[in-house]
Length: 347
Image (cartoon, rainbow, N blue to C red; front, side, top):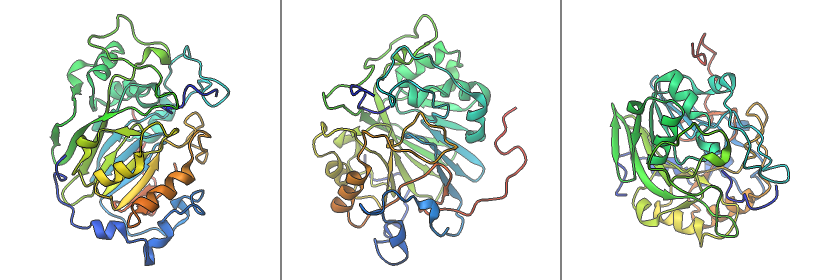
């Protein structure tokens, strides 16, 4: 979730991918249209010329969420799709807001996921995961708190893999490196609903305040042999030691809403080895439907973030994503395929 809720309103990557210089595209020549500068950050990559289709594709699900598809297999990260109103963007957060999940909206976007990665347990990261777990049987990977909450929601405990950070998991060729991480902080250096769980709550959570953060993870995913490694963040803070040497090809970086984390962008980019492509996430109003174009969270200065990334890592390409574009493994838009019957249906 946004870290501004007090306002009104390790090791080199596991599978080599020897083309970081291609992904950087150097901010020159053919790659230049995808480089966001302060004058271009309102334009998204959806208006650019598509590159040839590759085997791996990425779809931004809004907030910090992603859908990664490779050879008929799907990985989800922080899939929050129902996007219900909490008052956060309308004058003040209401902690007693009832949790809900809209099956129709969820089915529209998730396909048939095999793996669901959860960074932490705030509602804008986990609210739709219980439904997804129950109807798809996907393997859920998350913290102990995520485990206990999902069990309280009725998810099969055997379906959930508890991780802490440092694990390197092989899902039949899809490598998931688990990275210990941190939740972002607001201007008072605090955040909404801290705390962890060591047992399932006696009843299923009913409101957003019933979902504590429960520690935060990041993940680095390499979806198949020769595919790029993608570093996925769910909140705008990190453990410098934990990310040191990951060297991802793509970095999906959460935009902060405050400056309470010292030198967040330069420290992160340096620790990650200046990724070939940087993709800002968690800058949108996540209570607006995905059917509409992304609307900025007013607490987030996306332009300043992009300018700082460009300053600190001038060789990185910066791609500002939208909801309606499928991106290839170099984060250039892919041609939209003809719809297949039942492609987004879960029965």
